Amino acid sequence: MTLAGKITTEIGVHATAAKWFNLFAKQLHNVQNLAERVHGTKLHRGQDWHHPESIKQWTYVIDGKVTTCQESIESIDEANKTITYKLFNGDIDQHFKVFKFIFQAIDKNSGGAIIKWTIEYERVSEDVDPPYGYVEYLHKSTRDIDAHLLKAYSSLIIMTLAGKITTEIGVHATAAKWFNLFAKQLHHVQNLAERVHGTKLHRGQDWHHPESIKQWTYVIDGKVTTCQESIESVDEANKTITFKVFNGDIDHQFKVFKFIFQAIDKNSGGAIIKWTIEYERVSEDVDPPYGYIEYLHKSTRDIDAHLLKAYSSLIIMTLAGKITTEIGVHATAEKWFNLFAKQLHHVQNLAERVHGTKLHHGEDWHHPESIKHWTYVIDGKVTTCLESIESVDEANKTITFKVFDGDIDQHFKVFKIIFQAIDKNNGGAILKWTIEYERVSEEVDPPYGYVEYLHKFTRDIDAHLLKA
Image (tube, rainbow, N blue to C red):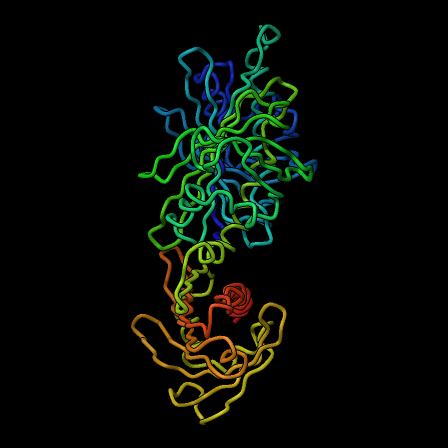
């Protein structure tokens, strides 16, 4: 899963965009006096709070924990009332390689402004969650500051209850597959995402007709939640669908609640799934729907892991087939190719699910006539096979392995694993694994277990290659 991401939230305020921009562009030191969760800030380096080379030290509260970081201004765009801040050191560097706040103040025609906060980040590992807590922090701090900016008459107004939150998530499956799932096979989502407990048609016979209503049961913030949903619009050209969500637990807290789904192809393969939540709360006592950001992220990860399986099982297939998965890694394509082309015997020491391998025939591990014996774990079961190299394409860093005998021949007439390592422009690589197979009968499932195996196997090896 891609470690980089972006979260955007838009908050309606009553003070003007000019007042907001002036505060952050010329009076940043005053923020500590206006926002309850900011415990303090001071100049760490430099004498001008707003000079791009100055560094400020901040102490603030995230998820109930006192947190520290340093910050500097990367850029200011006065025309668009936009400021980009780089955050680093302190608690930030333990979790993120890159962390930026982008602030923008936008005037509203009806008075007041929209404060648009964007968090751009890159996590240090998969074990680190996206910075959901900062969305709540920014919302609370924005409310605090708005009250102070308007303190002369703040008691006479009510904070804008409408808002919008956007998150973008990198996935491995293509935009076409993602859009097809939500546009034509929505009823299958309940089988793919752990936090969706079930869904059924409440009204209508066609899951994708705009007048049909579906009933959903799912888990948000650890609580089983229910709602109804209908499709407001579908934009096939932009692979975008807008879902209206209402009734059940939603109506207790929101007058308006919409999910906007968009699947965007990436040049390097896979896609970006962009989720936008548009909402209007029933009162100031209701928090914005922060829990849905985590829910969408976790559900997107679940679906992406299963999408090949889900997609394949929904279509009529011949006995022959192909599954491809692409996995982002940190080690270079050259390191990966060198391992499989010249040091294949080391793989057993790097991947937990490989229990052992040995030469079965021949003396050179990489000669096309040599045969290796492998013992490994698929779907929790110890499995054996033989393998030989069919072809090596050094220019494209591609190797095709033929896999046969042992447990393979009981299920497949043909089984090949094609490995390709592709450099990424921003460092690291994409590993493209393709499984080409022909089943012995319809009773045999396609080799879905090998997709998970290759993901785990790749992650194990990548961790070792980075240490080397």
